[in-house]
Structures are given as structure tokens and as C-alpha cells.
Length: 93
Image 1 (cartoon, rainbow, N blue to C red):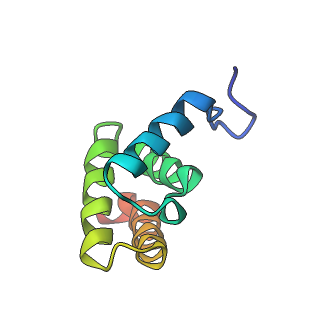
Image 2: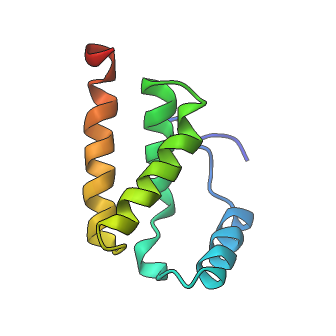
């Protein structure tokens, strides 16, 4: 599969199978997992900061979501804030 015009890589069945396995293994609510939103966070971190920021951003986002209750609303708040910080990264550096 080739990337779509927006630059997103297609999300294939292997990625969804992996996410399903992790959701089951760690007893995470499937409703709290938005693959596209998580990939958007990764893209924002990579483009605004650097590629090595992606796994660290993911880890810290997960940690922040867990501390904030671990539900979808917490993810949405954390993701929005990370997006804001990434958008203004060049102004704070």
C-alpha cells in the first residue's frame, strides 16, 4: 500500500490485530483506543520536534492519560494539549 495524499500511511490489518492483542492483554477499553488519533500524535511529534520524540511522546501521553483517569476523555484532553504544544514548539525552542 502506498501513502495517501495527506501523507498518512495506510493502517493495515496487522496494526489493528496488534492493537487488539494489546487491548486484550492489558485489559484496556477498546473504546479508549483511537488508532488514527494516536498516529496523528506521533506525526505531530515527529514533524514539530523530531522523530526520536515519537516514542517518548507516546509514553508520556499514555502516562498522562492514565493519571487523568485512563478514559477516552482523558486521552482527548492530553492529545489536544500535545497538539497545542507541538504546534508552538518552534516558538518555545
